[in-house]
Image (cartoon, rainbow, N blue to C red; front, side, top):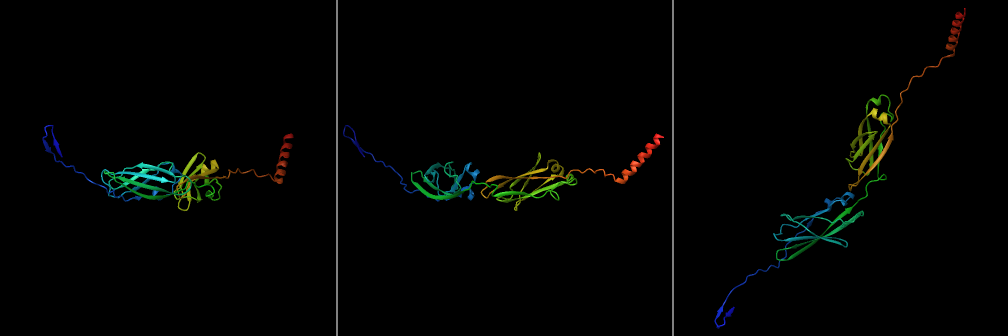
Length: 269
């Protein structure tokens, strides 16, 4: 560049300006985790935060900005996200994103990465999910009780012993589902085994005093929904029997009458 002053003197100035050109978009590899670890979303899950996670590979560099856009039907949310040094990320899904109606669905996930030069890379994938909020009911699960004692009636001897209250849960249930046995003001706890069986030990005196057993099993389905299923059973006991005075025979009455008459005649003499 040539410059001059008012007197016509000239000078030449030379300078240079350096710049960089970067038109390469970031490299992104998207792997999505299964929603809810692949388990069916139950009623409790839908009232809690649901997290979507994944991995973007190891090609991200400092200065890259990541956003995640999730879409179900006509509902779309763009969510900021933090990515760790290994490319792992997670976002909490908005409450209105997943329909609570039982059935299957999918979420379209778009990840955009913008580098420090403003180049953008976009990649899209889909994650599937299943919703089941219908818990067990009395038509899908039941509880039956076995007879208590030797015959279902508490006798005097059994009322002084510890007795087993047992039963079986059938239909929809899972091992370790909780069972509560109530007898009067007393409560006993158990868990069902793989076959639905359970048992607790109850003093016979408690059973004899209350005459009824109430059992509630909190059963779960495969999705993790729970519901209480209850049953009651009356427990009769044999009352203590008092020995009656045997009846007096006619011959005994005749002898007694004759004896009284003789005694009376002696007194009148």
